[in-house]
Length: 407
Image 1 (tube, rainbow, N blue to C red):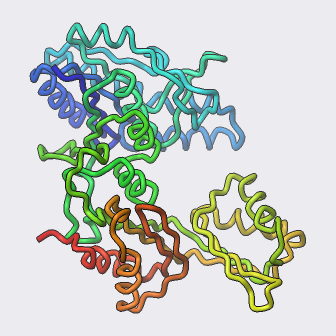
Image 2 (image 1 turned 180 degrees about the vertical axis):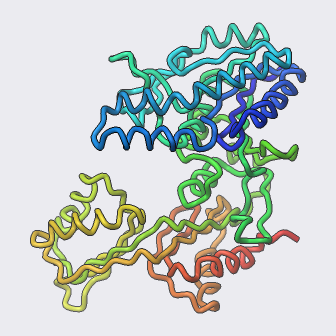
Image 3 (image 1 turned 90 degrees about the vertical axis):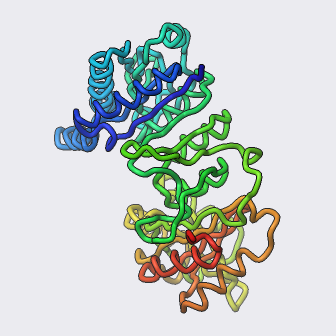
């Protein structure tokens, strides 16, 4: 008998018919003899609607009440799925985050899970009852208030529950049937991976792949939870996200990703003296603006430097304002910004033991006439910033160059 956690996202439970479809999938797992806990998201579009209601009610609002409101979408889904399972003759009950309980810190709207108490949940599972748990939510115990984990938090709920229950596997059901070498909507030759390492999946999630939420992959890697990405709508094998030791033949490059959520800022002729970088990036951090790629070029006179970095595209306006407000203190000659850029990354654990990966990337882009504006590297990835107009050409060209196209 296996113990598994099955997680279904918003598109998988978008309406009652899809919830009934999910119930049939869960019943199949139960009939196979497995102990099953299910984590569900709100029905597609519901959370956005609830957030919109809050923002229309008040510009400034209590985050504790915000959490109480937006968490209600998952409660509805959990209850409906429990009813659908009972209608199929499967013993089931719904669990809200505070009932499990899923204990979190007090950062309402973006809480982090501290622990999950599973004694009662384990007892019910052992009796053959399916636990349908509302994802995305927990309990902040100091004030005894509902908390939420931030957008996409149901993935994190599922992996955390799988770790707490010592489950054999956590199955994440989405509207795609696995993890691909690149976005199949852009790269027609993209192929599905049978297995991918935690490290590769973490890089892909943070660099533009939308299959899994980054925090959920971090948690899976920390607790060594085997995660499987599957389609809710097709009965096909998915992709297993596992420890590197489970993969015998490691691809040099496992995937090529594209992130469009990028914007570039360049500060010209910044005084080249100690403390300047802290003076630039400190105010941005205080404004909760994340900085990603950073490149510094030493000026010809050795007294000045040009500094280029990227932020999320939605933060560009705020970042420019923060820097403008500090312009006198920073002492730069000019500031340039560009929102028409994208980040292309090649990822693979095999890069640790193979040379020439970056050189092939640069050569391929050069042959296509694509200029590289910024470069960053890590042990298992190389990322470049290029003009947005070349995004799809670069993605397809690199996918072919690294031999990732399906035969």
